[in-house]
Image (cartoon, rainbow, N blue to C red; front, side, top):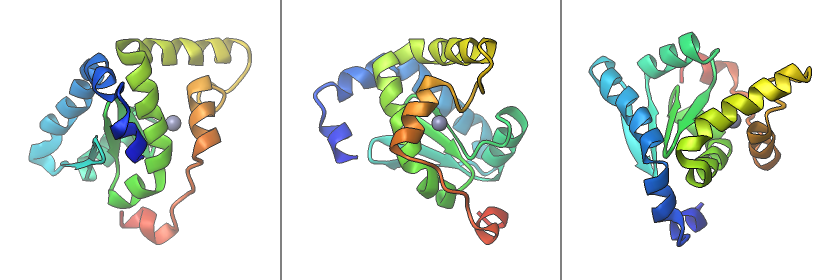
Length: 146
Ligand SMILES: [Zn+2]
């Protein structure tokens, strides 16, 4: 993913998607007192910990990871490792779409659902991410002890 950081459009995309990145960092700041951790990995803030896992379970259908701009929220370092390539595709999408990404993603899901498809797996943003990087499930021990 070094090419992402070396791209001449990376800085411009970072500014363009800053509102989304702030959203992810706000989640970390709010959950930091409860144990959420944040690391900068190749230009992306990776946020994890038990409160993030609870947040993803309660608000995102138990998703392993959710990307907001240049932040990725996930259960643990292990789940970041498993989903990293997939989530980096979403980071690239955010760099292109900026503040339009979340409305575009929601509208794409709605459009797919209205046409009888699965609003997650048939969403073109997800199809692009899964085409490049499929997320493999964790083993039971990794899932129980992320
Ligand atoms: Zn995805």
